[in-house]
Amino acid sequence: MFNAQAAQIFRSATGSLSSRTLARPSTTAAARRAALAMRSRHYSDDKSQSAEQSKNAETENGEENEKDEVEVSPESSLLHKLKAEETKVADCMSRLRYLQADYLNLQRNSAREKEQARDFAITKFAKDLLETVDVLSLALKSVPKEVVAPQESSDASAASPSSSNPPAEKSAEAYLKDLYEGVESTQRLLLNTLFKHHVKPYDPVGEKFDPNLHEALYQVPIPGKEAGTVFDCQKTGFMIKDRVLRAAQVGVVQDTQS
Image 1 (cartoon, rainbow, N blue to C red):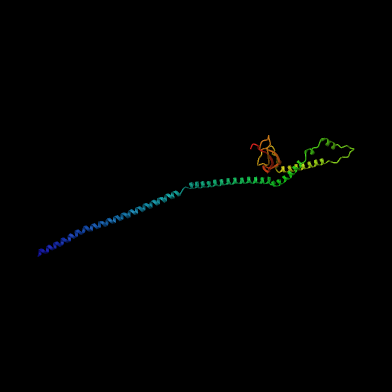
Image 2: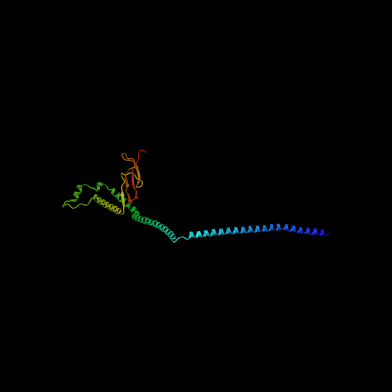
């Protein structure tokens, strides 16, 4: 009986001892795992903190570098401003030269236009006077030269009349001669007046036909003369300065080979 109780107590004691010994390694393993987890967390936190610190350091270094780049010396800033001002001055000088050239061109054009306006202001008036010149020219051409220039004997007899005979009346030829001289003087005075205003006549007989200066009225084949040559002038041409006031109306030698 006593032996049986002792055996039971021994078994219970050994069982409790075995359960304690088995529980200890499990608790130590769990503690080790928790410690490892804490260490890993702490390591990751340290790693993230170090990364953040490195980033902050890099940004601070970059800002410092930028500040160093921005903060330049006064001499370099003055040189930069001087270059900028020199660029502005060069730009202003180029614009001034262009404006000066434009102003000079404007002055020249204005002076030329003013001169042309002064020279060609009487263009229409002079063109109207050319009809009067043409009428006077036709009047002079209608009188034969034999009538205008009589013989010397008749002039001498008329100039020295005898003292016994009274002076005879003028003949019709004498009156015609006086009229001719009057018309000729009027035409000469009118042409001189036009000449003062740079209006000049030109007779193109014998020249080559120029459509800019001549107006062909007719063509006639004439042997012995070059084709395209002016051989007759019906109306004299006139120029004012270097412009054609009126083209000469002419007859041209015709080309017989065509």
